[in-house]
Amino acid sequence: MLSSFTKKTRLVRSWTAGHPLWCAWQVTYRCNFRCTFCDYWRDPMGKLPEPTVEQYAAGAKKLASYGSMFISLAGGEPLIRKDLPDIAREIARFHLPFVTTNGWLATPELAEDLMAAGLWGVSISIDYADPARHDAARGRDGAWEQAWRAVEYFDRARKYDYQRVNVMAVLLHDNIGDLEPLMKMAAERNAYFMVQPYGYLKTGSREFEHNNGPVSPRLLEMWRRNRNFLSNPHYLGQFDAFLNGGVPNCRAGRAFFNIDSTGDIAICVENRQTPIANLLRDSQHVIRDRLRAASRNNPCQKCWYNCRGEVESLYKPKSLLMSLPTFFHNRGQAQGKMGRWV
Image 1 (cartoon, rainbow, N blue to C red):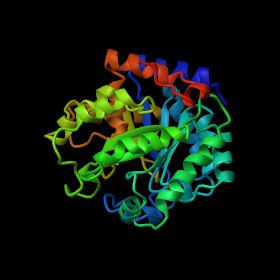
Image 2 (cartoon, helix red, strand yellow):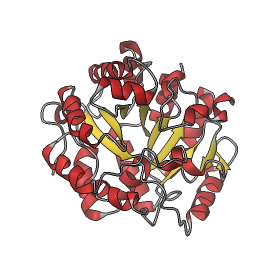
Image 3 (cartoon, rainbow, N blue to C red):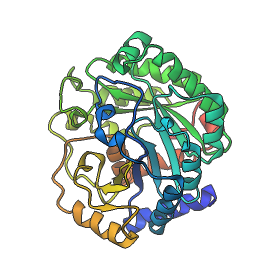
Image 4 (cartoon, one colour):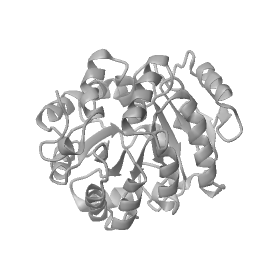
């Protein structure tokens, strides 16, 4: 396994060479929740065969020809895969993997195995400060309490200085007032907090979009008050633009891309119905060239997910400088007053 310092150095080289920094790798589309604002759990891809650990190892090595990158192991619910620690270990040989989970299947033992495998970090999804509202939105009684238990499991399971635990919320039509209480609950558990806006591409419905006036100034004020609010301020500053027409100049295919649970590659998760290559069958040169070709003149401005906005913030000099301290943070900074330097 490459050292953390070597991976970070390779990541910087990827940035300077114009290679992608972020890959969203959907390890499964199966899900044990029935969230009202997401319909991935209905996706027929969840019934298709999924790559083996050996195929993940080969794919991670192929991607390493571009340099190291952040790789989000997501879905669906990734903890459904019993071999997720083995998958994470293979990806961590070259890259900086992290897991996004609803936390339901987390146990102290699984958290230990995943952190020991070399995860960069883990994000647990919690959208409301009120347990009943969170459980209703997620379609599972007890989801809120188990999510916080998962945060605590992963906090205790950290093995390396660089590992982080995040609470991730989706900004919805009715939870802007819940975000700051969630930040404080996360800080009490040595966890960071991040937010992304609901995107109608997930369900085709605008029912869950935030619609209660400007939000970016409120988020930036929260960012100034809460040191564990990790989201980049440039990213937060674009929420209103996204909610009122969209953010242009998407870097999908250049700065980030998506790999499905079948190995199909698309410039982003919402373009997965039109893959441009397959990680298991195509060479790294074919994948690179097709990603670059598909990214040219991209007119889309329909999302502002973390995998877009946070990564694109790294191409703004001031925002990059704000992100670097977090990038090089250690466990000591992630405890106590948290590790965001400004």
